[in-house]
Amino acid sequence: LCFQIVRLLVMFLWIAHMTSCVVFAFGTSVPSDTGQHWLDDLPRLQQYEYFTALHWSVSQWSGAGLIDVEPRNTAERLLMICLLMCGLVFGGSVISTLSATMMQFRMMNREKTEKLGLLRTFLVQNGVPQRISLRVQRQAKERMSIQQPLSESPVPALSNLSEPLLCELRASIFAGHIVSFPVFRWCSV
Picture (cartoon, rainbow, N blue to C red):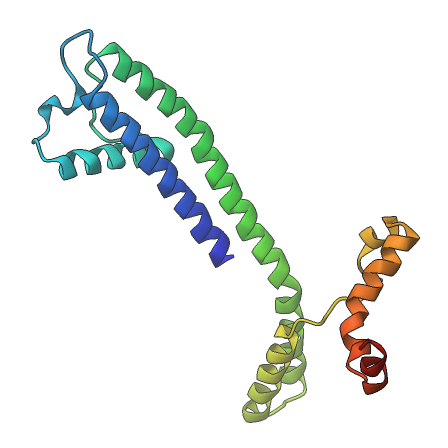
């Protein structure tokens, strides 16, 4: 979950950076029909100009649109309208993806939480001393966290494979185990 969130934020920051570079380029290089650019009112410090463009870009992509960067010509205004429209869609997508990831995480942990809650109820109802109760809960939680390897039966997609491909899959899975026996290691030489 944490990796997915970090990946999403890095992607968001990269898109914001690329957008800020385009906005910065529009403010410095694109011909103006009014003779003005959005950078005209800012101090002539390239770092400050870039971070102002990045700040504007992040606010547009997040859907907030709250920073005071005023387009001063038609090209800048058209660019900012397009970016604002894209920001509405992208911002909604980011929030939707983040919400779906959080729900998936909650659903994964729900069964474990329910089992541990039932165990706590059992321990309280049966008057188990706290010292033993804590040890029981800790061990149950640790053992529930161990991920058991899957067998074929809970993987329904495997039933769609052809028999030769399924045999090849099984051979690749079990080859390491079979070769670990000395008799078969000698045969494979």
